[in-house]
Image 1 (cartoon, each protein chain N blue to C red):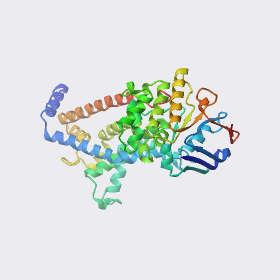
Image 2: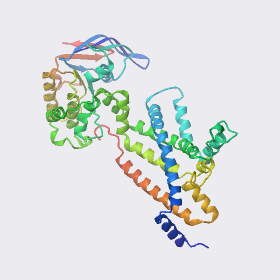
Image 3: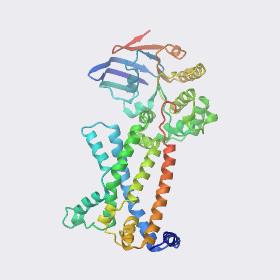
Image 4: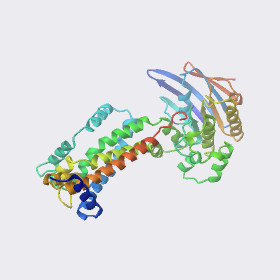
Length: 236
Length: 208
């Protein structure tokens, strides 16, 4: 029977020792999730802005679909992507299955609806006078959009933090389309699942500590951003 | 500079909100626009400032008629001024930054003119109602507009603040900047005006 305290101490020691295998796994997680977030960010913000400010046929249907996608399990995203990318699938020729780009695509699919939904509510909550004030002071449509982004920056940062938290902690899609290959596609969550299955808890706990620390940092940042997020209305 | 409105029609829902056959405004004019609630005063001002397209008709700026030029020459100030989430000085600099123009002297003068130089590094959202209106005017002044359109600028302001705004508008007018003032009732500001427009029942009447 393992001793919880001994395992925890050994995990801390492994983290502290700078174990290249362990930190390599952490690096895979961060690089994949950061890439997915960076790629998804601008299209998601633009989509959120368009849904908030433009009226077009199918707008409500698009919002409903996006909101529904928020609740899609990560394994379902992994399954669909696996079917698309497997050799027999329509995108099989791209040879992306079990690669980091495949993991990035999976995480883009997971964070895009979240970023759109949160940016949409940020833009909807923003004061309608922001764009008019920017325009009347000579801003072009693009400059007015950038001004609006600045005005709702804390709410958008909260969206980014939440999306990052969701994708770095997901295991379903990463496991199915990444394949959990050491030094290539093994990330924190897939490594924890693997090590736990083998009964090797030390590395799993060490990686769990990294994830929990990250969750704590993200939550503190989110709380700070939400306390700074305000929309200026009528002299507030 | 001359702003002309020709065959303007603005609809609201199925019916017309107002129609204006011809209206002309020069940079030296001081206009009091009044009328009942819902007559379309704010809409008309936004159309004049190029912020809203009319249902039909043209808004022309002589000698130039480009929309971007219209937005820089005619500045619309909301009833409740929106200040960007930055400090007072950065708010005044906003329009200049948009034009990629660096003129700290102009900004200093505008702050001094509005009596806000001592609070230039304070966050704009902490200002009082009167200070917000003064900042909005300073933010417009640095851009040397030909016309400023003020939508209910004195609502919720005390007498002292109204007197301060009155002085600033007088000064702007002396400098050759025209203005249109939307106010429900006559007050100290409306006395500065040399034209009175009544927008009611879908038509605009120029009164003596």
